[in-house]
Length: 103
Image 1 (cartoon, one colour):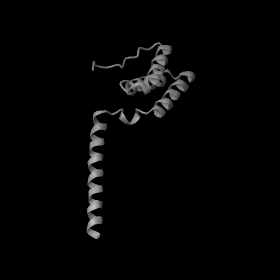
Image 2 (cartoon, rainbow, N blue to C red):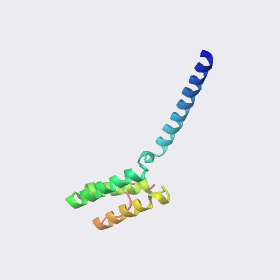
Image 3 (cartoon, rainbow, N blue to C red):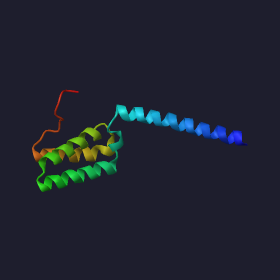
Image 4 (tube, helix red, strand yellow):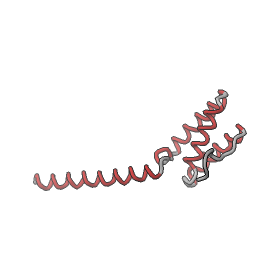
Protein backbone atom coordinates (compact mmCIF):
# COMPACT_ATOMS: atom_id res chain seq x y z
CA UNK A 1 0.00 0.00 0.00
CA UNK A 2 2.84 2.39 0.86
CA UNK A 3 4.42 1.82 -2.55
CA UNK A 4 1.15 2.68 -4.29
CA UNK A 5 0.85 5.92 -2.29
CA UNK A 6 4.49 6.76 -2.99
CA UNK A 7 3.96 6.15 -6.71
CA UNK A 8 0.86 8.35 -6.72
CA UNK A 9 2.69 11.13 -4.86
CA UNK A 10 5.59 10.97 -7.30
CA UNK A 11 3.20 11.05 -10.25
CA UNK A 12 1.44 14.13 -8.88
CA UNK A 13 4.76 15.85 -8.13
CA UNK A 14 6.16 15.20 -11.61
CA UNK A 15 2.89 16.31 -13.23
CA UNK A 16 2.90 19.52 -11.20
CA UNK A 17 6.52 20.23 -12.06
CA UNK A 18 5.85 19.73 -15.77
CA UNK A 19 2.78 21.97 -15.65
CA UNK A 20 4.72 24.67 -13.80
CA UNK A 21 7.63 24.69 -16.25
CA UNK A 22 5.19 24.86 -19.17
CA UNK A 23 3.36 27.79 -17.57
CA UNK A 24 6.64 29.57 -16.76
CA UNK A 25 7.80 29.21 -20.37
CA UNK A 26 4.48 30.61 -21.60
CA UNK A 27 4.71 33.53 -19.16
CA UNK A 28 8.25 34.30 -20.38
CA UNK A 29 7.02 34.45 -23.99
CA UNK A 30 3.98 36.56 -23.05
CA UNK A 31 4.74 38.88 -20.09
CA UNK A 32 1.22 40.32 -20.15
CA UNK A 33 -0.37 36.92 -19.52
CA UNK A 34 -0.87 37.44 -15.79
CA UNK A 35 -2.49 40.85 -16.34
CA UNK A 36 -4.90 39.74 -19.07
CA UNK A 37 -7.89 39.51 -16.77
CA UNK A 38 -10.98 41.74 -16.90
CA UNK A 39 -10.83 42.50 -13.16
CA UNK A 40 -7.19 43.57 -13.39
CA UNK A 41 -7.78 45.72 -16.46
CA UNK A 42 -10.78 47.33 -14.74
CA UNK A 43 -8.61 48.30 -11.76
CA UNK A 44 -5.95 49.69 -14.08
CA UNK A 45 -8.52 51.76 -15.96
CA UNK A 46 -9.80 53.15 -12.66
CA UNK A 47 -6.22 54.05 -11.73
CA UNK A 48 -5.77 55.78 -15.08
CA UNK A 49 -9.03 57.70 -14.67
CA UNK A 50 -8.08 58.80 -11.15
CA UNK A 51 -4.66 59.96 -12.34
CA UNK A 52 -6.29 61.83 -15.22
CA UNK A 53 -8.71 63.62 -12.86
CA UNK A 54 -5.87 64.44 -10.47
CA UNK A 55 -3.87 66.01 -13.29
CA UNK A 56 -1.15 63.33 -13.28
CA UNK A 57 -0.92 63.05 -17.05
CA UNK A 58 2.19 60.84 -17.12
CA UNK A 59 0.65 58.17 -14.89
CA UNK A 60 -2.61 58.23 -16.84
CA UNK A 61 -0.84 57.87 -20.20
CA UNK A 62 1.38 55.07 -18.92
CA UNK A 63 -1.56 53.19 -17.42
CA UNK A 64 -3.71 53.53 -20.53
CA UNK A 65 -0.84 52.39 -22.75
CA UNK A 66 -0.27 49.40 -20.48
CA UNK A 67 -3.93 48.41 -20.75
CA UNK A 68 -3.68 48.75 -24.54
CA UNK A 69 -0.54 46.63 -24.74
CA UNK A 70 -1.91 43.88 -22.52
CA UNK A 71 -5.48 43.92 -23.84
CA UNK A 72 -4.77 43.86 -27.55
CA UNK A 73 -5.15 40.38 -28.91
CA UNK A 74 -7.00 39.29 -25.78
CA UNK A 75 -10.24 38.54 -27.56
CA UNK A 76 -13.74 39.93 -27.45
CA UNK A 77 -13.89 39.96 -23.65
CA UNK A 78 -11.11 42.57 -23.43
CA UNK A 79 -12.28 44.84 -26.25
CA UNK A 80 -14.22 47.21 -23.92
CA UNK A 81 -11.06 47.78 -21.86
CA UNK A 82 -8.95 48.42 -24.94
CA UNK A 83 -11.58 50.87 -26.23
CA UNK A 84 -11.69 52.67 -22.86
CA UNK A 85 -7.89 52.96 -22.81
CA UNK A 86 -7.90 54.36 -26.36
CA UNK A 87 -10.59 56.86 -25.34
CA UNK A 88 -8.48 57.94 -22.37
CA UNK A 89 -5.45 58.47 -24.57
CA UNK A 90 -7.57 60.45 -27.02
CA UNK A 91 -8.84 62.66 -24.18
CA UNK A 92 -5.24 63.31 -23.20
CA UNK A 93 -4.25 64.08 -26.80
CA UNK A 94 -1.82 61.18 -27.05
CA UNK A 95 -1.60 58.58 -29.80
CA UNK A 96 -2.50 55.03 -28.97
CA UNK A 97 0.81 53.63 -30.17
CA UNK A 98 3.64 52.76 -27.89
CA UNK A 99 6.87 54.73 -28.20
CA UNK A 100 10.03 52.99 -29.21
CA UNK A 101 11.28 50.90 -32.10
CA UNK A 102 8.87 49.21 -34.47
CA UNK A 103 7.83 45.71 -33.43
